[in-house]
Structure formats: structure tokens, C-alpha cells
Length: 109
Image 1 (cartoon, rainbow, N blue to C red):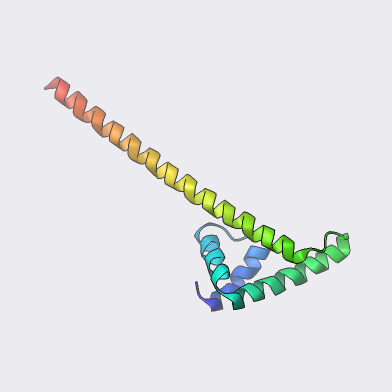
Image 2: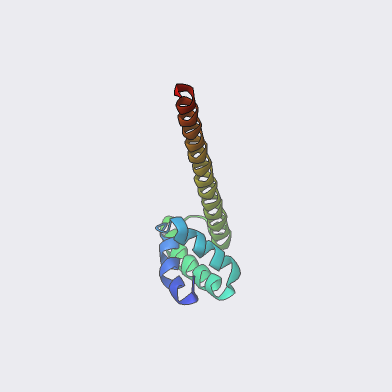
């Protein structure tokens, strides 16, 4: 993912509207690019500060952002694990079906 794409994805991330492969790419880029991370942090802090002034919420905005990134990264990892497990199950099911077809064919010959 390129830095010029990040502005749109930063807004989607902050508004919880980023998902799937784009989310994974976003997290990887943010972890590696300090310029984009700073841009995301600035946007997040501004948005959350304004919301919390109205609601009188917590003011540990940086900590909240780090928690959001950590939780998002965990969700991406879980999604990848579930996808891998699904693939393994499909492969096992295909192998079982193939074994059954070979066994039945050999039995009837």
C-alpha cells in the first residue's frame, strides 16, 4: 500500500469501516511508515478529542488509539487463522471424498 492511498484508508479505519485485506495492508503500512502513522494519529486525536469534549469521556487518546490498533491487528490475525483452518478442512474433506470414491470403485471391480 502506498502513502498516497493512506489518507482515504485512515479515515475508513478511524470510522471502523475498513476490513479484509485492505485492513491487513493498512496495519502493515502503519506499523512501518512513521509519516502515515503520524497522520493517522493526528486525525484520530482530533476526531476523538472533539467527540470526548461533548461526552466528557476518557482523555487518554494515544492509549486508546494504540488499543484500537492492537485489537484490529488481533482481529486480522484471527481472520487469517480462521481462513487457514477453513482451507485445511476443505482439503481434508476433498481427500476423504477422493478416498471414498477410490475405495468404492475398487470394491465394485
